[in-house]
Length: 242
Image (cartoon, rainbow, N blue to C red; front, side):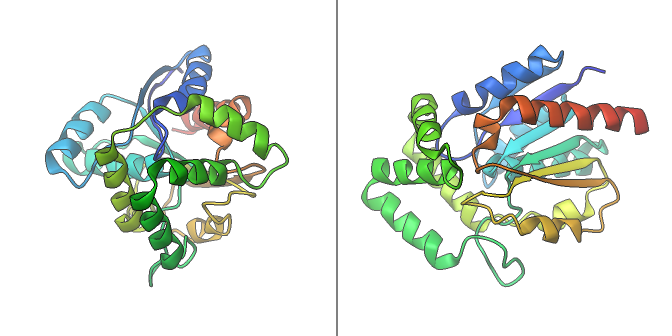
């Protein structure tokens, strides 16, 4: 059964990074709309994105996009009593560590990153790109590919994205979500500790699947065929059991 899929990219690079994944999913027969990150702290923008998302069957997000996807399925469930399939890729429910969620980037590390961003945006974005690719043998080649795909982003959107990464904690939403959800993580991810898998496996949500694969944080960009197959297998299995 072909699905309508909303695909949300991560922070800092624009939608071209996930364009190959979009095409691969479309080649499998799905209808896919690819969008950039957005500011969920803006109530009007959140409502606009929720209205758009409610027309899709599946909402997928990479990294920050996974947090946004989670917020959208929650909004849709609350407002329209509909359960969408949620899929996240390399997405920590809470990106920056706090008292309730320790398996995340240390506060000091994130604050240093934010300060670096204020001082030299281009250098900081390059460093971030390296961290996206870091951890595997093909890091240098992957970084070249990443740089070729990155689109210039509005400074305001980048700042909003950093605020979202710093403040969002959607663990409780995922734990209580009544719809189908599938979370994919990478063993060598330099931005999201793979130990987060254990945290999510402890959630009491009924329809929850978590998987750990080999790869960097950029696996949705660099392992398109594998990720497409995993998404399609999950959706096929989900359709058979629902």
